[in-house]
Length: 277
Image (cartoon, rainbow, N blue to C red; front, side, top):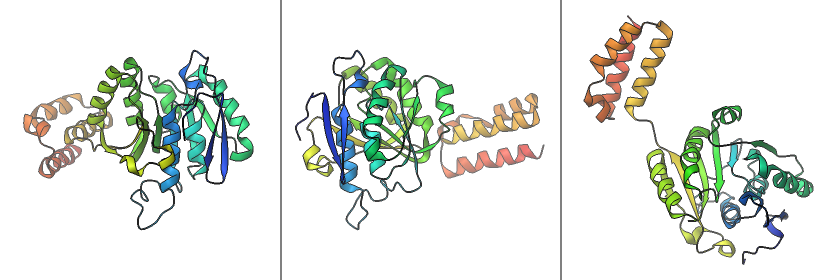
């Protein structure tokens, strides 16, 4: 399919056809349909059916899963994935984009047969993030990396919203080199990154410049577990003297540098001993 800037774009998903109305003259990029949303939906459609030869059967198992979409815009990816079985889904974007989203949800309601949940979300607003009731099994994001200043908030929101065993479904295209560099620098710290081979994309929607990535949260380092446990003890016992004494005595450089099983066991033993104080 050749991408077009027509006011209306149609996207076939299984036996349905989504009608996507965009406003290319708007000041807000979220009122246009961007290619990566189409690419992600059609990639998912291609591999949605489980089979022995499906390398994504485990990843794209939507049964009983919760999801949130960041920067939904016109709602393309969210509506498409909803039709593919990801039905417990909330679509989010900033306030100025909501009219375009609501218009497309209304136009496609006969196909969706349900009013999809949507919410205003600014990535740097912790109250709005908490109100979504994370964590989610899936975080969906397409064409969201184009302003460098928003990248730290975006990556932080992704990490906060996705569960420890969850997946970020990312449709990506390089749009701004500085934002691109910072985004992947921060993602490498927070996530294990898997790039979908281009030949695995839907052949009719394999745009040369668009890619799909699967991001999985990295396990927290032993020191993070250690500090969390100590803070819990401090809160429970409200004994600052014991807390700080224990922190100084135990948190030697080896604990911070080593995330091995032995180190983790040392931390657990220390915390267990503290509970007996």
